[in-house]
Image (tube, rainbow, N blue to C red; front, top):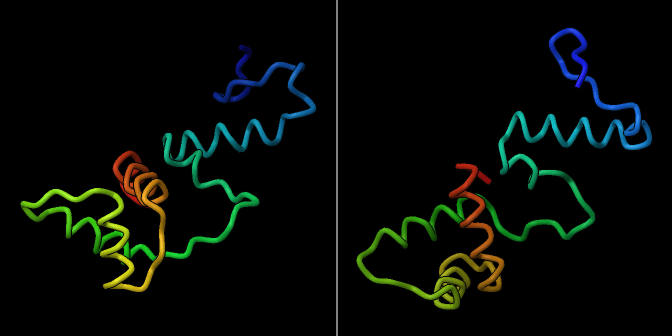
Length: 101
């Protein structure tokens, strides 16, 4: 790849997707793999706050093991946040990879 001022130039083939590709590469460079997940999309807005997930994480520090369903029930009882088990698992995994939400 040719280099332009210390920054590699994208091939001319990518002219039609040049800006989204550059933005994706920049998000990856700035935030690592977790940065790619932070792109704004058409999906629904988060129904949880970072404090809710931190509360779940502190609950995971206990000596007891929980299923994702039990964690969701506990989150609903304690904080009034309704999440599915798979959704909570993805959020926790994302925080583990990127270090933040």
